[in-house]
Image (cartoon, rainbow, N blue to C red; front, side, top):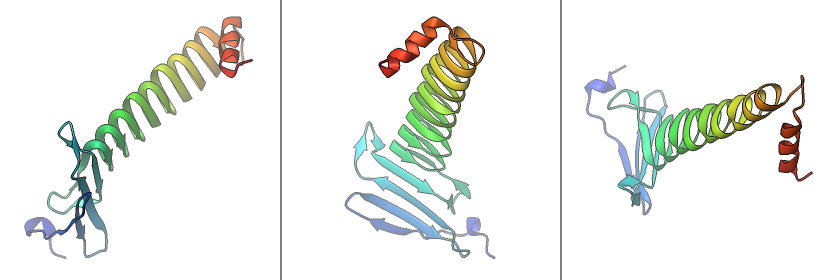
Length: 170
């Protein structure tokens, strides 16, 4: 098989009213594609999507846009295995405001490992308010918890009970 990195790559370029698609189909039928919207905000594409390995570089491209979707994504809203943004969704999601993923951060974080400033939800979570299997925070509802006001299998702090019951309106 020829080494595509040593050849000029001919992409299929498709111009649409919303943006540009750039595609390449490998001989083994695996696909590289990238979409970049015409619309821009703060100098970034409104939408940037990447998929597959770029034949020019032999690497996965990082999606960068207001809405970024790809294996690696950086944007206001980022979705990918590695996602970084104000709102991040991914296996490893570094969210400033909100993160959801296997390991995640944010003011509000939901994940297997959720490191939050305000509210953490997950298997192991931290934050001011935490609902988790293992929790660390100020108000903690968990199977096992550490913090100022904890409601767990070992004890029920009345302040924690009142706090979490007030969230349910009871």
